[in-house]
Image 1 (cartoon, one colour):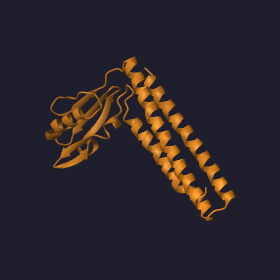
Image 2 (spheres, one colour; image 1 turned 60 degrees about the vertical axis):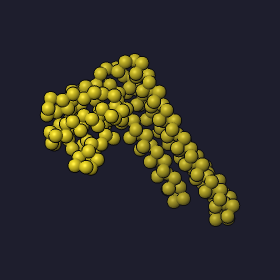
Image 3 (cartoon, one colour; image 1 turned 90 degrees about the horizontal axis):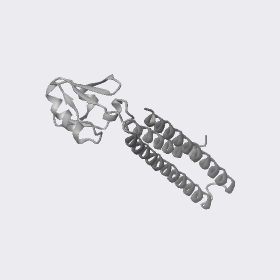
Image 4 (cartoon, rainbow, N blue to C red; image 1 turned 30 degrees about the vertical axis):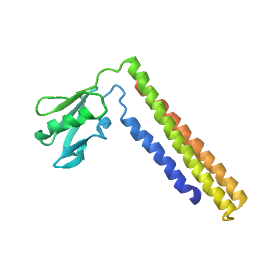
Length: 184
């Protein structure tokens, strides 16, 4: 692959990775510990990830169990979960916090699929912006006679092929996530 294109390929891959990361936080009826990835807890004055202060497990299909390393953290963890946007109320028995995921209603599933499509569209816009950025750079280089007209056309074609490839990948990721959400 052309060295001139490498930085743009990396940016496009980052857009795809970012989309995948966002999708892990969308719950699909099953308990997925990744929805807790963005939650931070005050641990001795330091904001720490939930994974850093507790053991997280999935004992049943729709239950996440959080066992803090220190029992005094239970209230802080509950508070952090309540102010997050995951929409689940934690319950605890003094030692362990449980998050029970209700079955998703048909209406909620459709809302989640809309959200999935919106996030995919945002990722596509990011890919197209990277394409524009690459084409602008190559046009500038062509006008400054740093690259030939043929080289400019070739690079423009390569950037378009990359754009198409990554947009197809976004569509596939979106389809898979939508299917996962709609599966009862």
